Length: 79
Image (spheres, one colour):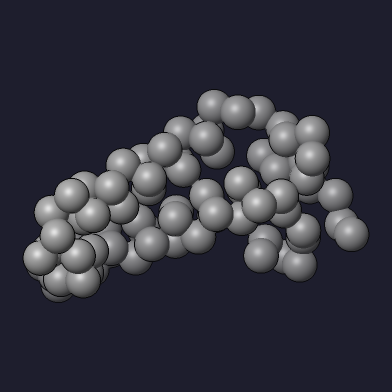
């Protein structure tokens, strides 16, 4: 993950969702290509769920402060 740091499962999932969201928005901005819609567009409920999860992941990193389990958002502990 971030510089070889260990993260708890919640932060690991949020980290990957932020990657998905960032790559998708980059593709939309540069190529006008929505990867999430291309992959999940045939199931609108699933597509919407991905967008909601990406948003929640961003909020969790912005609002939770330092995680007691893994130290994410603050000084992350090396394990």
